[in-house]
Length: 271
Image 1: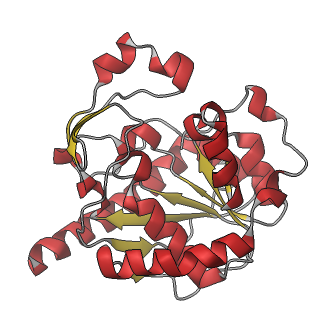
Image 2: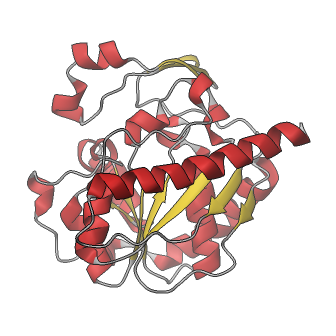
């Protein structure tokens, strides 16, 4: 998710990290495990060893607001590290501010508003943080681009890692973008509606998806189709404080694209 560097989210509430409820996560984990393994046929690699210290997980975003990549990634990290281990995911303003009751529920499973200060607060407290830097650019890319990593020119996550002095650990999901068929990214519609100004969004996607048939806009959740999903955790990438953020961003993007290319090839071979 695109990081907001300022705004009213720059003041970190004292109890921000204490809203996470490990007991609730432990109750949800068996349900997510069943969904991921039986319905989405999740296959994971690279999660055999996960460090306990603070890291910034950087993942590709797929399938819109309720994309199955989030269930697979969070569920795998929860299962590997345990519900008690501090793990937070950066969430968009739509859920955290504009739908405050929903945001309050998401906070209980570790969601925090996507601002640099919130993420930095969590990392400095020793937690691990999951971010989807491509945000709407990645989540709502056209279906013919489903095997692409789309980060745009967003490098806020690199600057965050540099300031927090934590490694960047890429996580790549393949198959999750087939939750629906995005036939238009809606760039012009987003500009006409001035979404970037009031909603921090640059896309207004048009998709064919269940259960709606025609799904209009970035706020409509799709029912994930039971396509198999493959998840890969890549080796950490060090973001040295004096390095150019865009150089590291391109390095991260290239590593993620190489992994996604490999997953796409192996998927076609199996098919």
